Image (tube, rainbow, N blue to C red):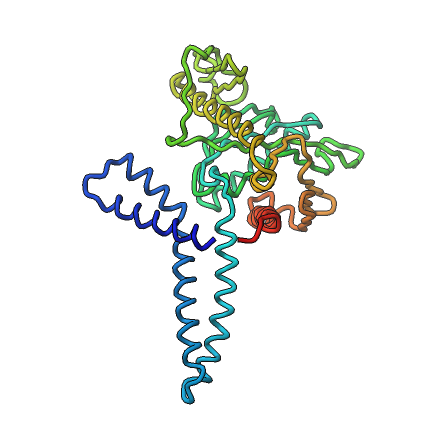
Amino acid sequence: MLRRLEEIEKKYLHIEEILSQPDISPTEIHRYSKQRSEIIEIVETYREYKQTLEEIEKNRTLLADPELGELAKEELGELLQRRSILQEQLRELMLPKDPNDSKNVFLEIRAGTGGEEAALFASDLFRMYSRFAERTGWRVEVMNINETEIGGIKEVIAAIEGSSVYGKLKYESGVHRVQRIPSTEAGGRIHTSTSTVVVIPEPDEMDELDIDERDLRIDTYRASGPGGQHVNKTDSAVRVTHLPTGIVVQCQDERSQHKNRSKCMRMLRAKLFELEEEKRQSEISDLRRSHVGSGDRSEKIRTYNFPQGRITDHRIGLTLHKIEAILDGDLEEITQALNSHYKAKVMNQAPES
C-alpha cells in the first residue's frame, strides 16, 4: 500500500505542476482539477501519516534522555495511537471507489401497488427527497411529472445537482413500502402500498457517450394533465425513443418543445450510461460489486409504518422512530448508516495490504 501511496503523491504533484501552467486550457483545468479532487484527501492523509512516523522516531530517540524522557514517552503513546488511526483511514481511502459517487443524478419515483394511496405515497417520497436536497444544498429540477387529481404522483423524474449526490443517494433505489390508514378509508383499516425509487447517475462531459441521431425516433404531442392551460395549446411535449435499445424518455414540463427535447436527451444519456454501467458491473469482481451495490429495483428496501411511527431499512436492520422528521427530509442518519454499512462490508472483504 505504501508504494501505491507514493505513486498517488507523485501523480498529485504532477497535476499541481500542470495546473500552475499559464497556458492551460479550460478543458484541461476541468479534467485535472477533477483528478486532483479525487486524490487530495489521500495525499493529505498520507502526508500526515509520514509526519507522524517522523515524530515517532524523534520521540523514540529521546526516551533515554533524563530530562525529556517522560514527556517523550507520553507523546509517543499519543503518536502511536494517531498512527493506527491514520493507517485505518488510509486503508479505507484506498478501497476501490465508485467513480459515479461525485455525479449528479436523475431520481425516478413511480407509484406501485395500492392505487391512489400509492400515488400519494410517491408524492410523499418526492417531497422527502426534495427537502433532503434543500437541506444538503442541492438543486432539484423536475424533468417530467404525471400527477393525479388529488395530489398524488403516478410518476416523477427529477434531476438533482450538487456535491456527491449519487454517493449519498445510490442506496435509495428499490421498493419503498408504506403502511398507514388512507384518508379515504372509512373503516380505519391499515393499507399497504408501494412506490419504486430509481437513482441513476448523470454522465458528465468527460464520459464518452455518443448518441447517433439516426438511432432516434422523436415524436411531439400535446401535453395533458395538471399543470396549467398552456400545456394543451401546442405540440410542446416530446418523446424520444432510442431504437437500438428500446429506451423511451419523454418530457412535457416545459412550454418550449426545444427545452423538452433537451431534457429528454439528458435523460436518454443517463439511461444509456446506466445500461453501460450494468454491463460493466456484471464483469467486475464480487468485491467491487458489493461496494457499488446491487441497485435491484425489485428489492423491498424500506418500510414506513405510520401507526407505529417508525421507518425500517431491511438491508441493514436499522429502525428509526421519527417518521415525520424523515419524511420532512431528515435522511442524513439513514444515508450515512447505509454508506457506513457497505463500506465496512468492503473493508472486511478487502485483503490486507
